[in-house]
Image 1 (spheres, rainbow, N blue to C red):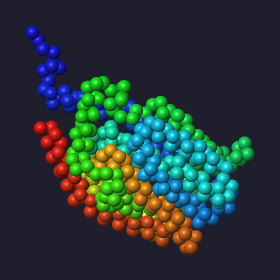
Image 2: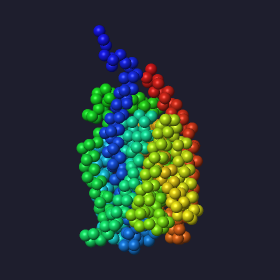
Image 3: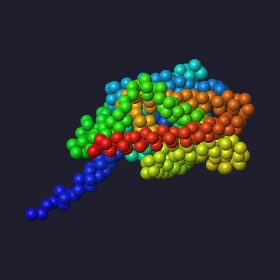
Image 4: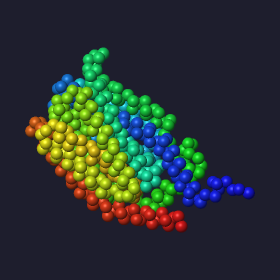
Length: 450
């Protein structure tokens, strides 16, 4: 009697097939949707840079007022980051991400009614408080669906939304500004209205669509659920062989080192994000739409380097060097843009800033969940983001202060480039910790298998 071919396959082959099919289903189900959510989040976070092309003149905002308003978002974000992620761990991603998106969408739309610096500062602070927990919550959420060896690519795929939002948001924001005067609204008011509303709609969809954990995923078969739950449980057991509590995670030296690295990087990147439209306009003299197209093209190139660095990091199972080299590229971009006087060369140097920064995302954000799990992981990731987002307040404020004093972005860019280089050096120092954790994880997983 002939035995069907599928019953003669060795167990390892069938397991590999289940793994491949499961991860493909997870990716198809979750990643496009999460990707769209982050595009909307990033547009609502940084569209202020495009709004400034008209809003500052309309409302009489100085560079200092705009810089403080850009950065005060991160004060609200930092205050509520850790509590928000701990609530997400308790109530589940579906409910909490829905709440976050609906709230921030409403506040983003309300930005169209800003008239004074006081209302500007208040709404930016509230927008940060509303969005707190979204990004670290998604990073934590992905650790429930992707094993360590696929996590950097998964995080990078999610975070390609940052440069893609530039590809979409640059031309879109430029086009919305061109509606200036339509139905009595300024172009910057159209920008906040049109780009803020999708967050509210998507928040309602999140509540229906998102699945909290693999064991409740009706779209996976029992075999697929069993493989994924078992795989992730084995990895979690390897991290919790010597369990630590939330307080210990929040005082962990490696978590703080990660936070300081991304704090230094964020000073530069958020300075770039909010001021790039104004810098490109001053360098090239382009129209608002032209500025959007230039920044959109930079974002498109950024995606390629981002995915390549993350895939290479997963293949080599190495993280710190992939972060460090990318941050050096970012630093070189700032310093080059500060010193180069020829507009084309200065814009090309400017492009190195998002290329370097975004290339760190996959390898960097896969590191915290390498040695933390459960509520400590949620708290630890949120703390890293909290520390980093303090840089989001400092970066735009620094550029504004130096721009007001010197009339140029040169000195500010040299300072931000130096911060990126220091961050690169600190990232190399993580190599010993990550290698040790990786060895411990592999050893414990093998022990569990045997």
